[in-house]
Image (cartoon, rainbow, N blue to C red; front, top):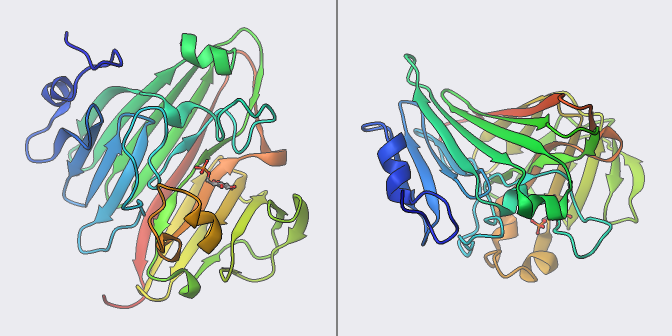
Length: 310
Ligand code: BG6
């Protein structure tokens, strides 16, 4: 079997193995960067095999739900700026500055395991990442990570982490979801009223949210103990993006605003106005402890509710 220079199956091979007539194909988003493209009865979705990263989700008759920077780079070794990068097995900056921020799962090439179409017209894609020499240099544990993406009336992601090591492990994780909004100044996040958060911009001090989360400057917070539903209220587009979490106790809300986004070369100029990250995860005091052989599935189901016609 021919392989990419990285030792993985080629895009043509993945297409030959996993394509489904009129619904699923595997194409290159850039050189050696295979993407599973789904266009079924409900929606169009693109998933990069690198990083197991969902890149786009657009229900038919809706504007895109996920944001991707127009200047994003599609290269191996780093995540694409936008979509849903997977932060694992740690979230945020590592105490050792030589280690990658947000873990390594988003920076590695995953395996495409299966693509299925069920009788209701829903499509399911399964991807997997296992420890290898490269991952063990960064995190010395055996593991299996599986991402199941289901595309139907809603978009669901289920990230299952299995501890295959002989020791127990502690980890933090996030489905680092970038949502596309009409105008950040007219966007709010509902469902976090009264919740305690760690403010990354104020020396990680703790505060309590009062009302909906609104945006008029850089914002970077970890909300703790958040198992309820969340809604992104996009006034300009007249829609709510509904997030139903599963086995997630933390939510990160992030917008880099003007200065920080200008410092990121893969963040299109002015892009901060058109996005907000509301990340489903477990971090801070909500970290996950896994005994040998134990597993945990972190999940989110995303759907759109119209407040008024387009
Ligand atoms: C968010 C963090 O989750 O990710 C921010 O809360 C961080 O602090 C942002 O800046 C982006 O991180 P990165 O590594 O993808 O640039």
